[in-house]
Length: 341
Ligand code: UT7
Image 1 (cartoon, helix red, strand yellow):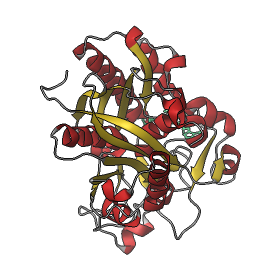
Image 2 (cartoon, helix red, strand yellow; image 1 turned 45 degrees about the horizontal axis):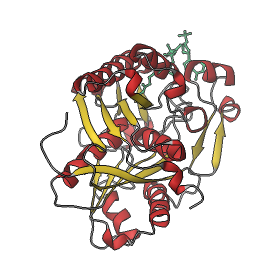
Image 3 (spheres, rainbow, N blue to C red; image 1 turned 90 degrees about the horizontal axis):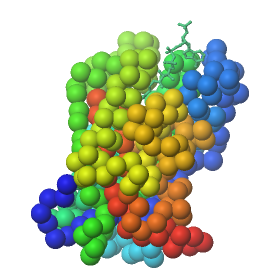
Image 4 (cartoon, helix red, strand yellow; image 1 turned 180 degrees about the horizontal axis):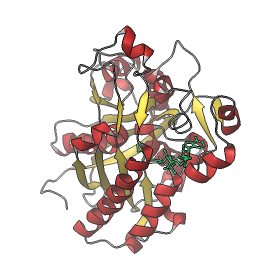
């Protein structure tokens, strides 16, 4: 349901980047007791991309993704007003990766900051950007969903190491003259109860780093996957249905659902509960795994050539915190415009 304003915000271009190295299920069989068959049937993941270069980090993934937008749109970075970096894995603590990215890409007139909402980072960040644009105060905002999760994964823990990969993808968000198009609505929720089920135990203000925390391997990702699974299905299905109902749409109106890519089984159950056939569900989990804030924009980036002006698209996610929700878009351009650019 759109608030009463005259300017709409729309995504006008996507850019994306994944590092070259492919970590296969077969390679993981050498690290932990697992199998290609178990990983494929329980998660749908075949391989993930890993940033091997230790001199590089989250900002490098983001910059590569944003540079694609600058190229495709022939955009002078000085025109960018704001860079929102949605990530759980900033380059460093106590500094702002979004500010660093803005500086590195030459967005000298932009303010950059980080947005922390785990797997919902991109959709929360996109809605924030859309609201800034709708206010009339800003014209060009980059939202980049990016995570370098491999740096926080314990490759001796089979519960988590099979799941995550690295990547980043960015959207340019601009005002749109046609107020029927763009970012139309969002329904978002959170519940801090979820913190106990997904976290990194040490390295925050609650438990700063010490020899003991390092010895206990508390600087790696922890997840009670079985418990999270149930909440993820319920949260993603209910928020997809909620955003459709609120906007008087049925599944027949929806061209695409873009679910967070944590587990193919979660995605299949959500699609079934929402009533959307799998042909309308964007997927990249088989080749990229769970890239946290990057899963949804990486899907949009890869499917961009197939998107048509006027397509209704639901972006839906569930992640740490817990955070969950759905955003409704009416796509603003024919994605084929960018083919070959
Ligand atoms: O992005 C944020 C949101 N994240 C999610 O939504 C993730 C949600 N959770 C999941 O995707 C799944 O719960 C997992 C993929 C993490 C785990 O799958 P599962 O079907 O829930 O497995 P499970 O944890 O119930 O474990 C089943 C069995 C256990 O063995 P026993 O106890 O039955 O003997 C595990 O020890 O599978 C075992 N297992 C494995 N076996 C081979 C757990 N991990 C592995 C593994 N390889 N990598």
